[in-house]
Length: 70
Image (cartoon, rainbow, N blue to C red; front, side):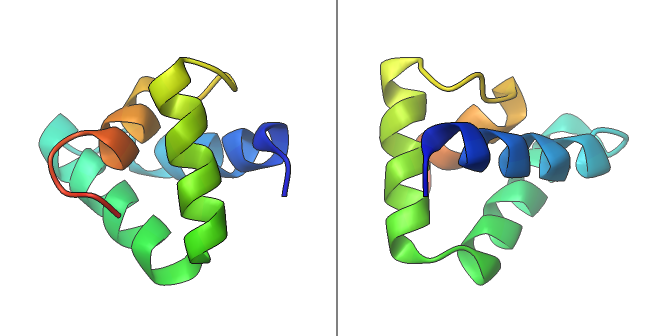
């Protein structure tokens, strides 16, 4: 799956959780990705986020890169 498609999907998840308190939104995005994305999807998205590529929402970047690894 290409990075643009993953970014679009991740950003849709972030838009859903945006109304939550920030830490809860990040945790919820992390949980959603962990439950519904394949390991390859998670690794591709994480690598793009770490490089600053793909246009991921900052909440998605935090969910994929910070603290717990998904």
